[in-house]
Image (tube, rainbow, N blue to C red; front, side):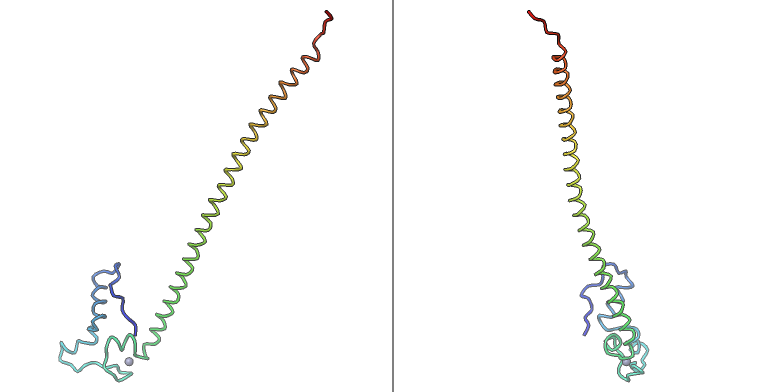
Length: 144
Ligand SMILES: [Zn+2]
């Protein structure tokens, strides 16, 4: 037997809270108005049993199409929830990949900068060495 949620959904307004309370108590206008108007109690015309909230929601075979519709909706909601969870996992995976990729990029960038400095130092050193060598090469040597 289905059980109503123990608490009313927090998003519900006053009207919905009244409906929830009436369904939980099993006292609805449809099933209990005969008490107010002194009429005979209502019965399900198709099943020929006393009409109650439980009968309408759970037992009446003539409400099956409504219940199957609700089940279909629940199935769709579950499917949607599963899809949403997988999308969330995919996003978390992409965030991790992005973080790793960013780390690799920053490491490569700093290495390229260091290599450029090293190249500049080597270039300046070689230039100075060549200038020194050529200066000595063209130096006029005087015999003392
Ligand atoms: Zn019925």
